[in-house]
Length: 340
Image (cartoon, rainbow, N blue to C red; front, side, top):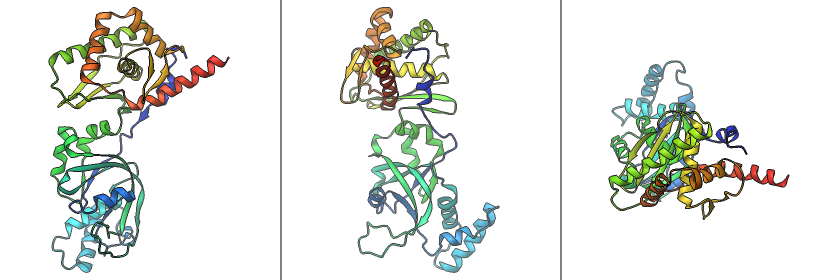
């Protein structure tokens, strides 16, 4: 593949839905955290109110539906004094959450968290009452494809703030850039390309590390200029740095960010031929990867190459996993060309 013709590669990049919402769903103090994860769902209580009841509410006005549901809760759950709270939570769970939305659930004490993607609409599953308190007895449920399980302490500092809400269902859209960066490390959203570099070093990060990292951006700029790519402006870099941490880079020029990702892959591989547990491709094939390899070996300022390599090694930057399918496309095309 000629390195100027990268439309097929760009088309394979993950595009995130800019309209999707992000939710925090509580697990009754962590009691149902394990059950939600094991069985791939989230749920909400108030079994006295069925999905059929909610479907019969006013479809045009949220406020009217809210008032109707409050009256229904008062009638069926006389022990609940503030009916506005469960009414709002039920409407959020059933009507506002959509397939494709992102949901987060906390464990006991919010020490652990799981992040997943909602699949399908709300359904009811009537479960038998059991003595095991870890089994969730709630009828109204949504299927979730869990993507990440991690410690809360491992999350970016900004995400720590979203645990303040005590609602059963709460929106966390303000934290979407940080959540997106956990789910993907190379993706397109809001007409902007995002590259997330995970920094795995546990030592203190020095100012020199970031000075060296700037050399990587300079190399990418030089390659784009000599290869005929449009400049595309400088790459914005946002840092969440507590070592380990993340670097989030963004630019509206998709091709330039793709090239930047390839540079990172090559530098983390330590050479033009890469064979590790994660990566397996040979730079002897023609195409953009070979072009970058040749640029690093023969045309680039070797001082910049050494500085960029030093930054990648020192910070222990991890190669972006979402670039692997794009590398696979390159390999497949190169293999097909070699046969002819």
